[in-house]
Amino acid sequence: MGRTSDAKNKILSAAHTLFEQRGYSALGVAEICKAAGVPKGSFYYFFDSKETLALAVIDEHWATEQRGWERILRSDADPLERLRQLFEATEATQRAAQDNCGTVVGCMLGNLSLEMSNQADAVRGRLQEIFEAQVELVEVVIIAARERGEVTVADTHDAAQSMVAQLEGQVLFAKLYNNPSRLNRLWPSCLALLGVSKSQVPVKA
Amino acid sequence: MGRTSDAKNKILSAAHTLFEQRGYSALGVAEICKAAGVPKGSFYYFFDSKETLALAVIDEHWATEQRGWERILRSDADPLERLRQLFEATEATQRAAQDNCGTVVGCMLGNLSLEMSNQADAVRGRLQEIFEAQVELVEVVIIAARERGEVTVADTHDAAQSMVAQLEGQVLFAKLYNNPSRLNRLWPSCLALLGVSKSQVPVKA
Image: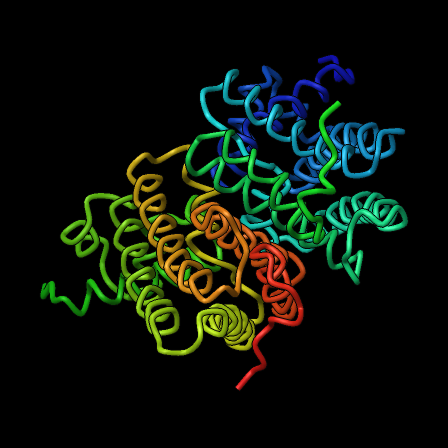
């Protein structure tokens, strides 16, 4: 039996889709292997356990998402415009998922935070690191906006955490109501959380 | 075999604890019955399925929580003070759960929204109704604050939704970091979302 990296990729891809659609606990290794079209022996050649697989899926998911966040948040657009683009991209991602599989899948990292953090310390630790990285990426932009006198927040770290919390909360409702348009409230909420007066709101280019 | 309402209550109570700690998919009916100390036959006397049980647990959970929200949000305290008390109570609830079982359990309604809404239409519908009720309860208070000139939001419904989303997002992080203190950011975020200037913040009685 050939155990190529192709089999590993098939397992990762199938698990990613299944975790997004149905969560972690509902799935067994046999079902993941069946969806991936690989024998169960291959699974245990690449992964010690379902939890090890979950960590790999989380890392791969965040690696892709991180590239997207960095591309937007480290661009040379004005700081507030970068934040607006992040929310626009978030809504577009959820809309694409809905078009592809019929339902808003939400944020896999948020889904797994609620489902697994009390039950798997390694997963909890990894998800904490990822959300800290998100907060840092956002905070750098808030600091840049504050240096330009565009936002009035006293504590940029708290503000960044509130923004990421707002994003997770609104994605939860986008999933519950199966409605990506819920996410168009992220931008006005962000401006309010940053203390931006309406006259300072950048006009979309 | 006596099938008293006592057995039903034992099942509801055991399921509530288990759903909060481990979610829905990870549990089987046999395990719930074992934790409740009732035979499996009793389960199917009272409930058609695990999903029917989940709906009953959700209803019972919200009935209790709703009484708490109404007591606080319909009191004769000043409107903004009522919102502050709601966040204080939310933090106290998560802290008590952590003291009792070692971990922040989060919001069972939010947990089940992410875990089940794509998989069980009846559960999705019930959770939508509950979150709409939460938004309505909060909106009435925001309207009262606006009538007193204390908040500047244009759309009170959007503001109430953003506040409930902020609450769910911060509860997610309180659970992920197993740290109820995360929730002390709810009050300043609420003031920002409502456009309350610092000079207008009510002093705690």
